[in-house]
Amino acid sequence: MERKAFPTLVLLLFAALLASLLLATRASAFVYWADAQNQTIGRANNDGSGVNDAFIHTGELPFAVAVDAGHIYWVNQNSNSIGRATIDGSEVNNSFIIGITHPDGIAVNGSSIFWSTIPGKIGRANLDGSEAKLEFIKGAIQPCGLALDSGHLYWADEALSEAKVGRSSLDGLFVQPEYVKIGAAFPCGVAVNAASIYWADTGFFGGGTRIGRADLASGKSVDPSFIAGAATPCGMTIDGSSHLYWGNAETGAIGRANTDGTGVDQSFVVTGGQPCGVAVDTLASLPAPSGGGGGNAGGGGSNDTTPPQTKILNGPGGKLAQGKAKFSFRSSESGSHFVCKLDRRKAKACTSPKRYTGLKPGTHTFKVWAIDGVGNKDATPAKRRFKVPVQPLMS
Image 1 (tube, rainbow, N blue to C red):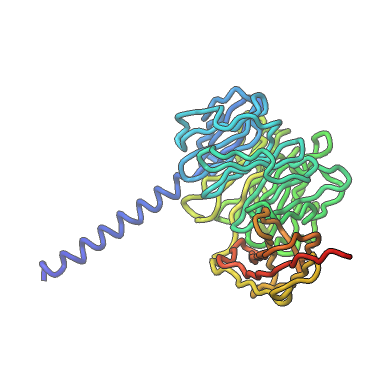
Image 2: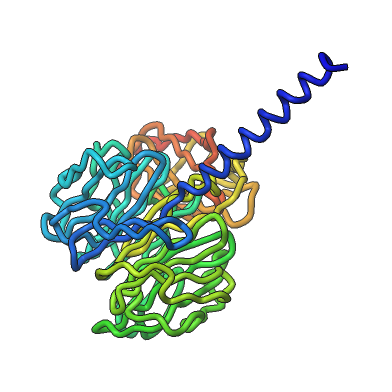
């Protein structure tokens, strides 16, 4: 009997050890903020305790912050750069990515870093800082803050009487600059979860008091005063426990509420500085893209990993009498968008029908990919080859 009980005892001890490790992991989650006043990155435990407003000294006017499994990232407005440190605050590099004009938002996922700039452009680089594209997305007016989910990049756009939240696919090809029309506001900070988009209304000259919300799937049902009582809110994020965070720059505190708008605490963390940009280490509770910023990526997204199938419905046959072509196509999933490519031209976002004119004589190849609502892209594009004949000379 005693010998048979031994394996059971081992299993119980192992279970207890595993539970303690899980609790330790969960307790290691942190809230981070960019402190523009003290020029530091601050950190506190995710229950609001253990405040360290000088966790990382930057000296370069940090304005937004993001985290992933191994690193902390921030934008430096003094040196027009992105800084990076290891997750424990060591190996600080204020010049991780340089040459960025007035950055004010940052977000990261498992492969890329994205940042917004006041000149109206959004940049992108690989997670190691290589292959930086300073104009990955154009067309915003004054983007201030970024957020990510599994299929899209979002940005708050400070457009005064016509403020908005823009959205694009993660490859930057399908851009919707007015996905949410907010109206009169000055948003600087955006976050998303599976149901909603949230933004921080900083105010035209500071003094904003509102957190807004809209439906994620449609961009509609806009509520510009979803949460009231903030104090110049600047930067947002969401954690894996359905908590929404924002920086109250005027009172030097981090606010927090449930994502349904209840449980509002405008002084969840008292920082001792001027926070603008919040990030949460969600590794213990949410296996979703992390991010940050003067608009920080929230959690959420979808577990859908099945790509859509693309089908060409109509198009030219084997030969084409004129230098014109028209293609109609569809996706197996509703809500998809498309990318089209002709011959060696650059692939671009497109809609059905897609028309081409002025085609030169010879053989051409048209390809189209569908991308579903959470970013899954058809790995095998629908393809059609056709020929434009040489036109006979007029006698």
